[in-house]
Length: 207
Image (tube, rainbow, N blue to C red):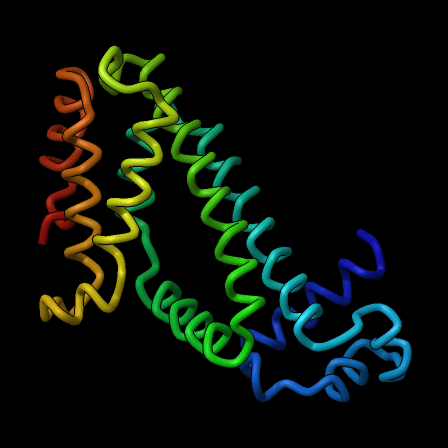
């Protein structure tokens, strides 16, 4: 791990704990044992530091997700396990954090969202492609790339908090169910049987 990565990881935790607006460059410099001048030689402003911290956090999350996907027996097992073990409190925390980033650092937010969305589309395409090879998702109608783009657009719609507020949905569980139905909609008979059997043994996913 490079010295820059150490600074970004330490500072990323501080941003999450304190918020992107409240944390000062003086505090960052002190926590990393350097002068503010040295800090500004590495990052020309707070916005650049924030952006690099967020992207590194996202990179770490991406690697964990891919490792989990590689360890699973099939993509539906990974998907169902992810829904069952979703940390709602953590998701809400990240939503609030990024709401502040959008408010106070809109350019950083735009750049980060662009990169994160690209990764989510690539991950979906990987999942769909593997699911098709495993005989769990339909083939011959749309390829994995087009299906992944369609699913991504739908997932953004069903997980958007503004949409949920308009529909008076008070929690995130409804969006999880919608995503489950979307995935089931592109599943083969084999895939649907797997999902239905999983739900039979894990009924809390539909409550």
